[in-house]
Amino acid sequence: MSMAGIFKPYLMKIEHIIDETPDVKTMRLAFADEQEGRNFAFRTGQFGEYSVFGEGECTFCIASPPTRRGYIECTFRKMGRVTSSLAGLEPGETIGFRGPYGNIFPIHEWEKKNLLFIAGGIALPPMRSVIWNVLDLRDRYKDITIVYGARTVADLVYKRELTEWAGRADVKVITTVDPGGETEDWKGEIGFVPTVLDKAAPAIASRDTVAVVCGPPVMIKFTFPVLTKLGFKPEAIFTTLENRMKCGVGKCGRCNVGKYFVCKDGPVFTLAQLKDMPQEY
Image (cartoon, rainbow, N blue to C red; front, side, top):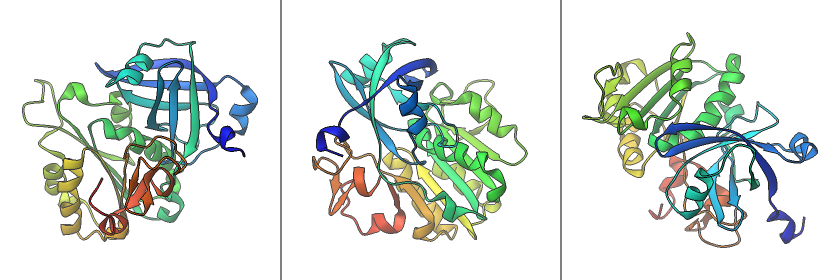
């Protein structure tokens, strides 16, 4: 494929929009060319560049699982010019999508293991893709635990899916909000994610368990030591980086950390790999 070809976006129709929080939306996107949609494939953990014509591109993971074909979903927070323009679009309008880019969560290597997902705030979308992926292949995995927190109850994304997951007999869900972020009818935990994880530790076995951590840097910083204390090896702890990814193919040099291009060598890394990188992420 020519360099021009790899930067040519698919045309995507916005099928519907869900308001997750006051400033976070989820869009379901269908391929304008149905044949392109049938040919399109990706794997969980990969990301794309979403373009609003005349405004620019923004980078998000693909939040839907590859087990559900014919569409992709993205979830984003309205923060800058492009995401504000994207948030202003309506169902039926067209945007561009380049991808998929990056490496993947190696879920086939995780088969017959327990899975522990730990997420904070707007970082649940990349984890949503892998959670649904393994739930769609549920008989291949052992215990599945999801620990998710946000600053306030209003900031929790995917509330309908958290309720669905919590209602399943084969998934354990622990939700928490920061102190002061609870409402009168809140029934989850109150506390920061690392603290709540430490509190739940007696019920979490590190043996034969893979941990996936996505969240704000400060949450990740304080969660890794808790996992280490629980006995998780660095090779069994996965996370994603989103360092200023732009071109998606390791050419523009905006996202490199040491010798690694996050868009090409990542965005999925183990803690063991992070330990070998400069602390520039």
